[in-house]
Image (cartoon, rainbow, N blue to C red; front, top):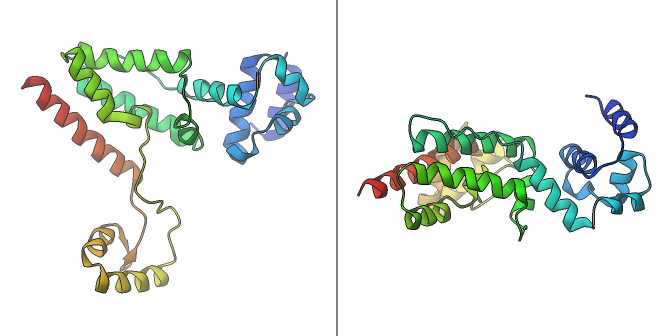
Length: 222
């Protein structure tokens, strides 16, 4: 839907908390999280910013609600042949949601009190693990090991999204190899035309997830 059409739709719909949160998520998706302010959100909805406070207590409440709105998009189907297959599918579905809302991971990491949609999602994930034959204690450990991967993201050591052009990357790779050969060898695994490029984040995420799930299964049956 075009931006103008979306804004027109907002203006025709009675103002509710759900409508405010939907507009805030759309604004963050389009212009980035830093663009989400009461003033900008009011303009998006065609109202005075002060009118938002009938439905939103403030910026932190807004961010809490935005996180819940995004988490509520994650499809959860607890049916599956086994716990590992079901949990893997659920987490990769969560990742697809996070990739649609690239700002969301950054906000989730700062929240201190999960809302009802987040609690419902965690309840479903925990249920998948427990129904798979894990003890309560091992389920507790599994949740800590999975960490933010449960929501479809993880913290990389470095941000490699700013990949340089091929000539610059090749020159940097040559300099790196002479002083730091082990790092250069690892970086070269993501090589582009003899230089250093970004990793396939989806592949690396799934690789790490599979290692964790395999390890948890070995512990479950031990």
